[in-house]
Amino acid sequence: MVNTERILENFKAMVALDSPSLDERLVCEYIKRYLADLGITCTEDNAGEAIHGTTGNLYAFVDGEVPAAPLVFSAHTDTVEPSHGKTAIVHEDGTITSDGTTVLGSDDLAGVVAILEAITQIKENNLPHRPLELLFTVCEESHCGGVSFFDFDSLKSKQAYVFDMDGDVGSAASSAPTILTYQVHFHGKAAHAGFDADNGIHAIKAAAKAVTLIPCGNIDRGVTANVGIISGGKATNVVPDLCTITGEIRSFDNSKVQEKLQQVLDICKACAEEIGATVESSHEIAVTAFNTPDDTEVVQRFKACCKELGMSGDTYPTFGGSDNNVLAAHGVEGIVVATAMNNCHSVTEFTSLKGLTDAAELALKLMLSKD
Image: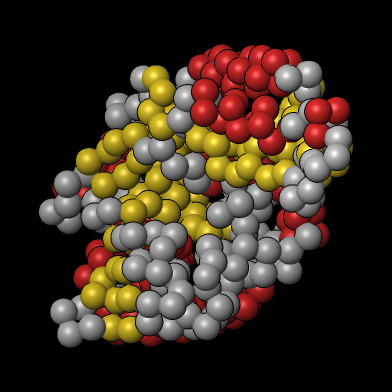
């Protein structure tokens, strides 16, 4: 039922608009105009002000005739860098890529296009449907910074489909981890490296030793960890008095995140004390884990719609965070639906015309469901 030509036109048009995190204004204005042409009023919240961005989250309520509980359909409008000057190149086999110097932006414009095409079909063909809520968020790539400021008291739905997952259409992520980020500052003592080195306390040495001892990778069942940044020092002739390491821990078990963080802090403290340095630390929970079991209504509906479309309906865990983590934390049960985006967060990112079409068909099928 969906219009493949329109899907491609919308996708190419939005890809051509720069929309890095904190500067999604062009794509958001495109969505506003598009929905307005369908007779749908789209409102913008003040998340942009809160996160110092150029625009807020977009929300629209579409009343329905089918007496069923409302559903929210969501996708994010920002892309990772490098993103300026993107263009969508359609190849003969239907694959769509960038020119190789930027990301494509199918993460998550593929999700945006799918939702827009589905709601367009409903409006054009006067298709009876349940009440629907559309939520297009900003700054998702920065640990869901935009949706965190959305007014969830205004949301009517208790179930969600977040169109923001890589892989084949017809699959979805039903669980995702808590993501904790931390910083540890090693404080030493500055001294001249040539004349007075023995009186210095080398902060970088303490931090470097700690990094070699901090477990990284798959460190436990359902737990990953990484030290991603180390920075310190002012000049080659100065014993560095400050060095900072920044890392993250992910786990499907919230208690495991805190346990592993304490291990990191204990290692850092011990390495600092060996040479007379001190440490101070800070951390924050970027998103909290969610788990949506297969026997829940939101998953069963997804599987039923996939079966009707000849899709797998597979659900699985993911180690990536998404806006669905935040929705779940506010009592909205949902899953993260695959939209045929591939090699995300790289200049080799690609999707396909068939994938975009399939995602739109699935979105439409879910919107028209009566259960």
